[in-house]
Every structure is written in structure tokens, then in C-alpha cells.
Image 1: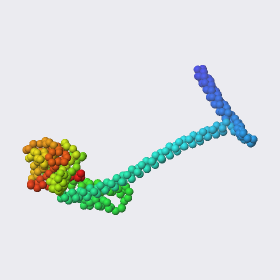
Image 2 (image 1 turned 180 degrees about the vertical axis):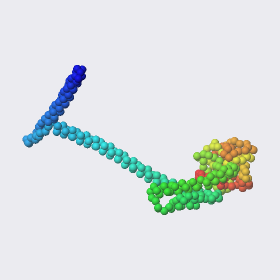
Image 3 (image 1 turned 30 degrees about the vertical axis):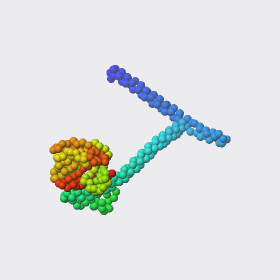
Length: 342
């Protein structure tokens, strides 16, 4: 072996010996540290409980480790109790909130059921009215188009359904049946709309609207036998007197036609006569002023004058007449008048 190799071997032995000493010293220090810690935790402690009275003094011995362990356990149990209590309070609050929501939901459900019952009552009235209208117009009734729909366009089966289901299931079945019926009612209603559209010109050619539009409008004298307001004698009133307790309200043509007379009469005062198709004439009397001229064509709803108090009159009003040929007829037969006599 050469001299150089001997030197290298010697250096390796020195390094290995030094490293082994340092490792041994490190572990010895660690061991001494744990021994000191063990001695500290193993120190004996005496805890004495001295009562204020002359009772017996209570004392017991323990060590630091047992004391620390007891403190950690007490703190852990206390913390766990606090956390559990907070979670319990939060859970109770959430349960209370859910209970309130449940009560509100039940109340809303009861209200929904009441509204559902009202809906079925309205549907029953609608069915009766629609059936009468369809019969008058000669339109076929709604046909049953599904197994769950109503038979022969009648809602009777809807309201006499056997108690096969209850609660929400029953209500859902009823709503499905009502939906089926309404879907079937669309077609005849569309037929009514088409019929009205084709007959629109006819409705404008007959006196079918009220000559005055006012929230204060009322009938001061109806058509037929009445006591004359001046001589108090019975006579036949040949028209309807409309009043709003004031002058100046617009008077409208009740049907399309041509103005044939614009004049003044001692009895009627300022008046206008309009000729319509089908041999119908309308007269508007006691006007304050007129807005049309003889020969003028007017449309249904056009303003032809204003309510006044001219001629033989006890107050501002409109005397309105309907003539068919030479006959005077009750205007209420052509106008859907629901006003009360005052």
C-alpha cells in the first residue's frame, strides 16, 4: 500500500470517529433533555383544600403531568360543551324557522284550496252561461276530447267526481279536468268571435249603445205610461229620459246613419233625428246645441250635440226615442240599460 493511500485511510478514520462522537453527543443531550422533562413532570405536588369552618383539611398528592393532563381534559370538555351548546341553539333556531315556514305553507295551502274552490264555482257559472249562449247561437256544445275531460261539455262530472282520491291528488285531477274543459271551450268561443265580427256592421246599424256616457247617468223617466211632470196627467211617454243633473254632457249617435232633421220645436226644444238602415229612426231632444247638419253621415258613437234644457222641460236631460217605420218602440229593447229610475 502506498503512502498516499495510508494517509487517506487515516483521514477517513479520523472523520468517522469525529462524526460518531458528535452523533453520540447529540443523542446524549436529547436523552438528558427528556430526563429533565420527565423529572419536571414527575415532581410531586400536594393540593390542600382548607374549609372556612373548622372542618377537616383535605389534601391529596399528584404530579405535574397528572395536573396538566387534568387541566387539558377539563378545558377540552368545557370547549366541547360550549361548541355543542352553540350548535344546539343554532339547530333549535333553524327548527323554529322551519316550523314557522311550515305553518305559513299550510296557511298558503288552505288559501290556495279556498281559491281553487272559488275557481270551480266560477267555472260552473261560466259553463252554464256558455251553454246557454251556444244554444241561442246554434253552436255545438264542447265535446269530450280526452278520457279525463268532461262529458258533453258539462262541468257536472267535475263537481260530482267520486271520492277516489284525496288532498292534492284530487285537486290536481280537478284542475286537469277543468283545463281540459277550457281547452275544449276555446273553439266555440272563437266561433262566437267570428260571428260577432261578421255581424259587426249590423250592430253599428241598430241603436245598440247608450247615447250618454257619464258616471252620473240615470233614467229620469222610462218609456210607457207616466205622469206628466207639468199637468200631472197620465200619458204615454214615447221615449226614455236620460239625466246627469247638468247640461253640457255629450250626446252620441246610438247607430250609424244620416242626419235627416236638425231643428227646434216648442215641445222638444233643440232636437236631431237620424235615419238608420232597416227603417229605424232615432230622435235626440232638449239639446242645448247640436254639432251636426242635415244630410250629414254619422258613425255610431259620434257626438251629435249636448244635453240641455230647451223646450218643455223641468231640468237638463235628453229625451231619446227609437222609431221603426211609423211605430215608436221602447229604446231599452235595443240598449242594455241597467240604470235605475231616479
